[in-house]
Length: 361
Ligand SMILES: *Cc1c(COP(=O)(O)O)cnc(C)c1O
Image (cartoon, rainbow, N blue to C red; front, side, top):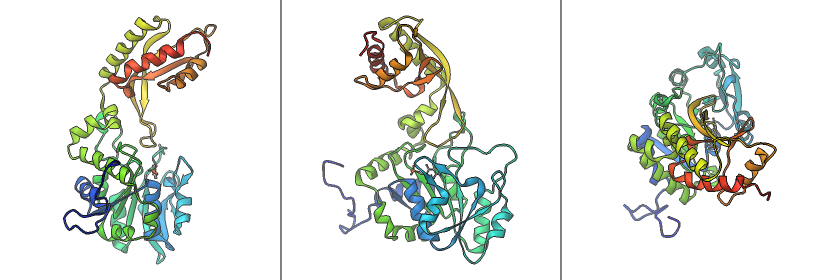
C-alpha cells in the first residue's frame, strides 16, 4: 500500500471517484450488523465528530457515573463543550435510573449518550440504564441514542476469565443509532476511530466538513482492513491478532514458556539465586477492562543489592540493543510470559545478559 498505486478513493466497479470508506464499510457492517459505518483517526475524534454533527447547540443527556476522563486529558464534559453540545448530567455517581433520563428530556434535547467506563469501575450499590431501555426511551421521544463503547470488542472474551462486556454487535442489535469505538484497544488493530450505526446518522456524520480534518490515512486504512478481515473467522482472529492471542493463551502454556526461559537464563547467565519462575497476574491494558486480571507466570530477576542495583539492571535493559521493559515489583524485575512470544525468548536472554554483566557502563 505504501509503495504502489492504490484505489483509495476510486471505485474499481464504476471507474469513478469513490469513497475511502468503501474498503472497510462493507466489512464493518457485515461484522457488527450495522447499516452504515465510517472510520476516522481515533475514537476521540469519532466522539467529537459525532457530537458536533448530531447535537451541536442541543442538550445531550449523560449519566453522572459515566463522565469519563481517559488519558491525554480527553474528558467527556470537555469534549462535549468543544463540540458545541450542552451536557446535561443526570442521576448520581453510583446510580442512574430510567426516570432520570426521562425527566431530563425537553424540547432542547438532541441526544441520549451512554459512555463506557473504560478505566474505572463503580462497585457496590449501583445501577445504570441498559442500552435497550435507552433505545426505547429515545424512540418514544424521537431522539437518537449514541454509545461511546471506548474499547469496543467484537468477540465475547468472558470464556477467557474476563468479565462479560457487551460486544459491538450486541449494542448495534439493541438499536443504538451511533456506536463509536477504538481500532487499537481490544480490537487489536491500528489507531483508528470507528463509527457504526443507522444510515441516516452516519450519512450526516460523513458529510460534516469536520470529518475531513480527522480523516484516516491510507496506510492505517489498509491495516484496519487487514485486521477486520481476520474477524470474519473468529478462531482466526483469536489466533492471529496479538492482543486476543495473548488474552487467550492458557495459563499452562505461559508457565511452560516461563520454565523454558528460566532454563535458558540459568544455562547462559546466572543461577537460580538470580532467576526464578513466579506466579503473577496480567492486567489487560489500553483502558479497556479495568480491574481485571488474568492469572499468569513471570520470570523474576533478583540481584544482590551489594553487587548491582536492580534499578541499574532495569535501566540497562531499556538501553540494550534490543530494549526491554520489565515490571518492578518489590526488589525484583518481572517479565510476564503472557506477553512475550516464543520467538522473542532468545532476544530477551541476550538483553538480560547485556544488562546483568557486572562491569558498570
Ligand atoms: C479510549 C476511549 C476514547 C478515546 O479513544 P482513542 O481511540 O484512544 O482516541 C474515548 N472514549 C472512551 C470511553 C474510551 O475508553
